[in-house]
Amino acid sequence: MSRRIMIVDDEAAIRESLQGLFEDEDYRVECAPSGEEAVARFRKQPSDCVLLDIWMPGIDGLETLARLKLLDADVPVIMMSGHATIDTAVRATRQGAFDFVEKPLSSDRLLILVRNALDKRKLARENLELKQQSVVSEAQELVGQSEAIENVRKLIRKVAATDASVLILGEHGTGKAVAAHLLHRHSRRAEAPFVAINTAGIPESRMDSDLFGHEKGAFPGALHSQRGRFEMANGGSLFFDEIIDLSPSAQAKVLRVLQEHAVQRLGGAEPVDVDVRLIAASSYDPEQAMHDGRLREDIYYRLNVVTIRMPTLRERAGDIPLLIEALAAEQADMLSGDPVVFSDDAIAILQACRWAGNVRELRNYVERCHILRQGEVVRASDMPPLDQGDMHPGTDISDNYHRAREAFERSYLLYHLNENDWNVSRTAEDIGMERSQLHRKIKSFGLKEDRT
Image 1 (cartoon, rainbow, N blue to C red):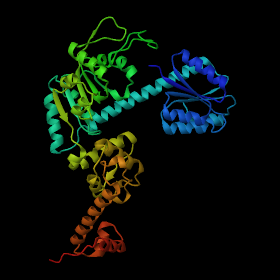
Image 2: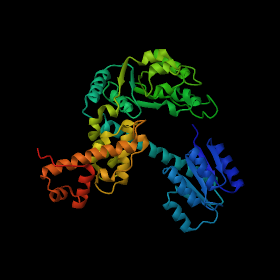
Image 3: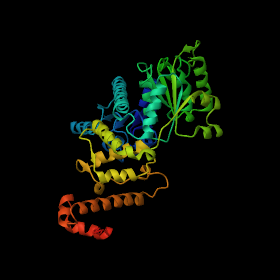
Image 4: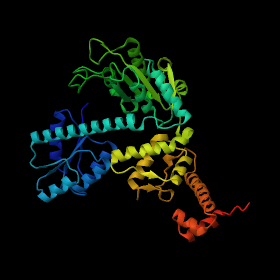
């Protein structure tokens, strides 16, 4: 697949010249005559690399660079100028520019720079994916001690020893991909590849090539032969995330591969033998999907040899403290710094929430706390706001948040008051609160000493 280049320059002749140069090298090229339009276009359709002029009307190249980096911190941007100074080049580099070239532009130098920039971006993404896979498979795994999650572990261990196809069902963020990784790691195929495909992220026009591969010249732009996902996963496991997003025609082709154990590359003359274990996942009810015509019955029954249902976070709220600890360690590893620690009152509030996005949403919130924390401990009083996405649909966030916090604070104060025989001064000192503030809390909560 050709990669996308954006050329930003207020001179039409330069835009047209560079567009022709890169299109001849099989890049997809988009042009913008101003920084404002470049940012707007990038927001709608990100590019893999940007060639950016410094001196333009409106917002200049340095301001455009800053705005592009806010949208994608890793996008390589090559700055161009006909009358730049050393100070300008230094400022651009400090703002994250990949390189700096002077006009008139050398075609060969530009092509080499763009190729190097794209290679570096690809390597960075691959390293990040490897790191994230490591985090998923080692640090997070299936954290928890609840009966619900332990039942999933037992079923995974039992099914992993077979070659049966597995369908993993559950809401968004419940850990379906984690379960798929574990199935592979505990199987006899563990040393072979584990290949994942997010069907929602692949355009229908590219689906056949992505799944089954193609030969050189099979279609315009096919400059090289390419293996598909089935060949990449040969001997191992192929994980279809959100199988229902696969079109019915593509589902039929996948079923044929499973039955014949062979794929036909686009433009290929001979079938290629493949041996894969198929693991599929869905956030939707497969019975309803069949009724709606989104899931073929034949592939459903082929996949549904064993079904694993991932419990929601609401069904295992008791696991939230362990999950928070694991997710905090994960964030510390990825973002640097010591793991953030949540106080008991903060954990109580998080346990009272009904997370719509399950573990994924909880991870996002822990990351937010890691970034915004003011100290080593996050207490209820300084927790970042809980967004609508963190809560179950229909839940009144502010009401849920304040009721949970109020209930915990009331019981917390009452416990310490009783421990100190209702000595307000000693209790205030014990919990680190001003005596006057504690008096106000006692009055507002209507706390009274039980003399029975």
